[in-house]
Length: 221
Image (cartoon, rainbow, N blue to C red; front, side):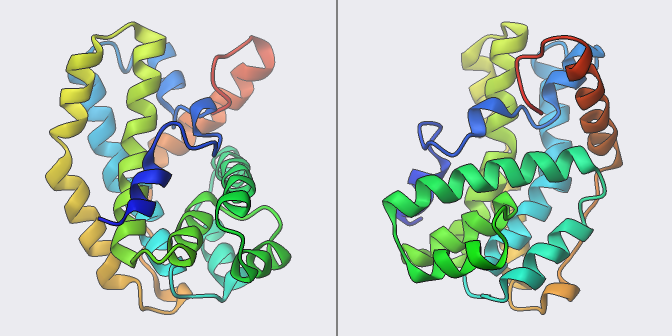
């Protein structure tokens, strides 16, 4: 695993991930996640859907510089407007941090083609710019899909951080499997990339936006 993957997966990387719960806040508000056991089910489901989609496009972005097409295909696979907005907000923040850390004409080209790119696309682009592989990008995206909600659960529900961390680490084999599948498909044309869906997460995201307008929420998504 390349150092760049460690940097991008680090919660201290200023990519804006700390303000996004990946649907966990709404799930907790509805009583769908209440303890470590239900959190584990949530994380497993998120990894196999939204996490796999992010890993697929992050892996593809390492070598594919057809930015507009790649970003548009990910947009098409993200039916929830709230999910799209959250992804683009985090993508823009990650690009801003990445431009300072790894200035590159490749990143300039990406932002010229799509000023607010999806997070997975930026993640893959930065990995490639820094010399990382498609595997590095995929495993970073897959890991972030569960580490963010896990961290949010500790803040929202006061769960035992040791137990939550153990739940995340127990997903290691599943994270590696998601990354391996993403790498296997990374050479396909953007239109042919896999499209795992998560209707439940889409509905939670839309509900979160509506409730966020009515009352103060801790997370933007």
